[in-house]
Image (cartoon, rainbow, N blue to C red; front, side, top):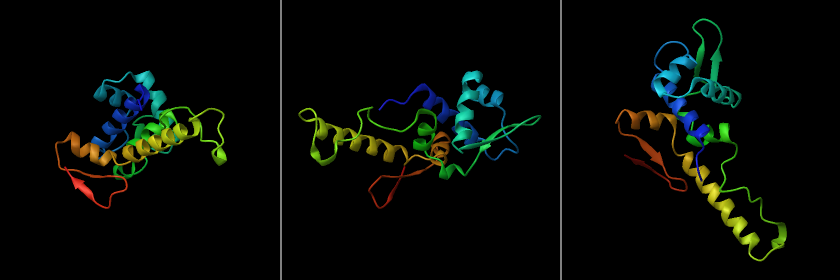
Amino acid sequence: MRVSTRGDYASRALLSLALHADEPGPTSVQEVAKRTGLPQPYLEQILLALKGAGIVKSKRGVGGGYILARAPERITLGQIVSAVDGPIQAGDFGLPHENGSCEHEGQCVLLEVWNEVGAHMRHHLDTFTLASMVKRARGERYDITIPNDDHAWGI
């Protein structure tokens, strides 16, 4: 999987909002662009997509800007990337054919594998929350939960 520039910029913008979540009021696009070094016009498009996905809220007018729509503990990197790039998958190969019938030798087996790889990528990205990224950015201890594991690992 390759994270697009859009996915990276969205993650950086939301991490900036999370790092400053204790400050009163919304943060302007200009301020987020200044903090992150991201181009403001592109950032505006990304924030609109994130708003459409329900990850941020916006306020218009003087003192307007963006805030997180929910707690940083409830926003994952998987959700962020999916919001701006679409579904997280290993490729655009489609789903395995039903009943094991395939047009070409080995096709169904590989389609199943690529779908499993995509599922693992989605699960892994969902182990990283904005809250854990804030702790990492501040050099604090944070926990990650490994998919299909019953406990968190402190780092």
